[in-house]
Structure formats: structure tokens, C-alpha cells
Length: 275
Image (cartoon, rainbow, N blue to C red; front, side):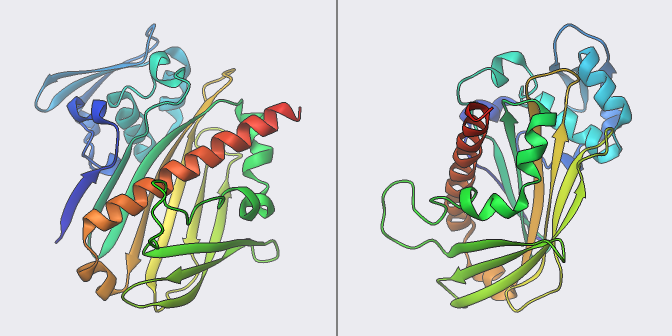
């Protein structure tokens, strides 16, 4: 079983205990939980023993979450991403984890959104607008290089009738050509205990056997911000998986994540100004 991990960006994360471990692999029984603390923090006691300190707001969130949600809270706290010092930075340091496993490319990444969740829902659920702002500069290399990415993401058209994104991509190497991916939108954003939404490929194609990813939202009560943790995988054609080196995927994913986060920040700021 192939299992190659690469952290993408954020040198300060390297000293944290779970920086290179997928959230799903965290063992909750190894973590002692102290609730209703003054700050969110994480401590390593030994190689397999940890202490998680949570404020009342995050204790309330933690208690209601399913197992995977609890692991995400542990992961975020271990990265110091739930601390005030991290989230109040003008541009919080990005963290992403990329790994290959079972013929799939897997990605985990986080974002702090400086907007209250109720207001943000109108933006998040305006799926028809995604094609206008989410893909801005997504196919342009950030260093100004004119070389093409391995794949271009050209359209993200919302199909309201079928509740999916009609996604059009162009492969520039290995199996070159234009491809269509239908990504179903599974919306659980109104679930107060575990708000999330998932994009899942409707049916296998020549390009990929499976594509799916879930945006997990942590929403502290009364806060003017919320946290998104994304975990997703793309189970690709065997030729892509075996012949595309992970350093190339690393570069392309890192740049795309940075561009998308910039687009989200720009969208949030514009939404605030329009109020």
C-alpha cells in the first residue's frame, strides 16, 4: 500500500506532533481533554500521550461532533490553528497535507474565514456564483511561469436541478484532453452539531474512479469567524497515479490552494463591503 506524505507550506508547523499525520489517523484515546479552559492549546506529554485544552466555545463544539470531527479539532489544535494568535494574523500561515494512498491523491487543508457563519452561509450556498469567483486565476502559475499546469480547471457550472457542479477540466499531460466531471453537492450546512458539505463524483470516468471531499466547519458560538477544514481524495487513472511524481502534484496543489484561499479572502472582503 503506497502511503507517501508531503506537507505543503508552513514551516512553523513542522515541530507540531501531527503536522504530517492525516486527521483520520489520530487516535483519540491518546488525547486527554481539558474543557472550559481560558485558551485553546495542545501539549505533547510523551510519544503517545497528549493534552488538548479547549475553551467553553470549542468544548461545546467538540462534545457534539462525531469521531472524525473530534479528530479534526485535535488536528487543528495541534497545529495551533485554534489559537487567537494564529487566527488574528492578517494572512494566517497556510497548512496543507498531501499524500498518496490506495491509488488516490489525498489532501487536507485549513482556512480561517473572518466572517460570522450565518452571514457566510449566503456566500457558501450561492453555488451558482462559484464559477465567477472561485476559479479566478486558478490556471495561472503564481511565479509567472508560462508553463501549463498538469490539469486546467476551466468551468464549475452549477446544475440546480440535479444539485451538482458540472466541472470541465483539461488534462495537459499523460492522458491529454477535455473531461467532464459531475460533482454532487451534499449539503449539511444546517446541521448545528456538525455543519459540512461534501462534493462527490456522481459516476466513475476515464479520468478518475472517484473524487470526493468534505468541507468541515467549526463554528464557535457568537464568534465573528469560523474555521474550515477540508479533507478530500481523488482516485485517479492508474497511469496518472503511477507516472505523475508527487513533487509535481505538490507544486500544483500548493499553488492552487494558495490561489483559492486568496479568492475566498477577496470574496469575503467584498461581501462585507456590500453590507
